[in-house]
Amino acid sequence: MPTLTFTADFAAPLERVWELYDNLDTLIAVTPPTTKVRIENPPAKITAGSRFTLVVSQPPIYVPLKWETVIVDHEPPRRFVDEQGRFGPFAHWHHEHRFDPLSVELGGGTRLTDIVTYVPPFGILGKIADALFIRRQLVEMFAFRHKKTRELLGETAPTKT
Image 1 (cartoon, one colour):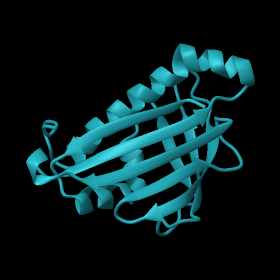
Image 2 (cartoon, rainbow, N blue to C red):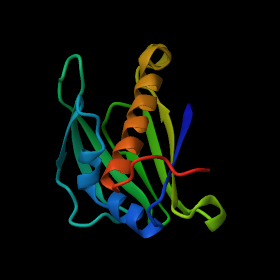
Image 3 (cartoon, helix red, strand yellow):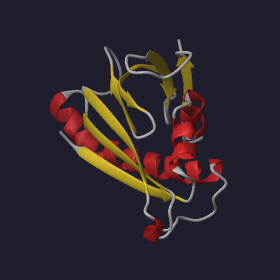
């Protein structure tokens, strides 16, 4: 199973970064503008066991795809894990979000680490698609998410690490 890790440091305190990500509206806000996302049946509050459906459309086709998301672990303000439920674009999707305070020596703030383990659909064809474009799309998507997070936090440049 491919595993990708994406890390970004923010000057904002842990509680502020957690508060931003513990809100489904942020998922929409940090999605690249070429991808259309709508949330069906959002929970009133994110907790372990929460389920909701994302309706995602991406270029070049923009055919809506439903993706059931399940929050399997929720440990405020340090981590939460979402997985693909009964339906979605992957054969397997596991996404851990970690929030760690940075030491004063590193300038304080928060380190956000996204660890994604996934299996593309369609067996060998999915492996080829992963090599050709899926992995690249994920790398670009998380780079956008972290850049947009920085903007939402009112930060202009990465903190030093």
